[in-house]
Length: 277
Image 1 (tube, rainbow, N blue to C red):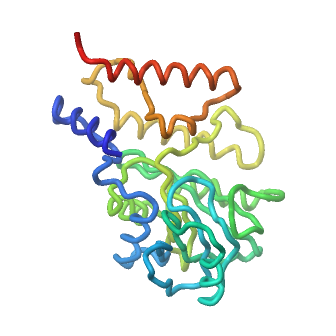
Image 2: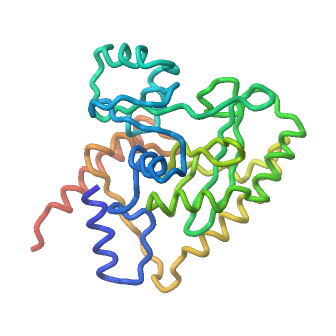
């Protein structure tokens, strides 16, 4: 984080008009974002660090790591007694949090997760995922024509734009995908992923395929808005720190490409440490 902040500040010093999205000194990560939104009365989700000694006040809840994308570590914990029992399970408490579960099934008995990108000043709806499981990772079961039409209208109408802009502004975030549900028609934000996966825009089939063209047009327009034509074109060498490069993934990853990546990263770090002649 310190290295990223130093790079951002160096870019601003060299060119003050440079626009930094998700500046490391201001962008809130999962815990801080949810805490800010809750304290501002903008989101019901309550987060509690397990090593803080504080007790949650909202149930049900689940436990998870504060960082990463691995999701819930537990099922839904319904009471304080169950929470205390979960803490006694012997796992380390550092960087683990309790998150209140603020979703309810829709009229079809399915849980929903809405997704929308923030790119600069634009909010771009992406999808509505539905599942019988409270942990919604993808749409399960068959998709009806009625639901496909609802999702297409969601993408076109952007009904939650104002609320999502306010929430991400409060979190100091200008780029990422917002994952959220709805309560009484208002967004309930679960997290903002600053390294989102974009849909496969070349895939146009299926009942839900019509929305991809709408999303693509909005993504292109948003990217054009944050582009800086005066900055010119240049190649940027990305050298990850050694503690994180093992998590880097790429398309068609295999053992050989992984090893080549590790060697390139090692050589790049050595070059960065070498003092100038």
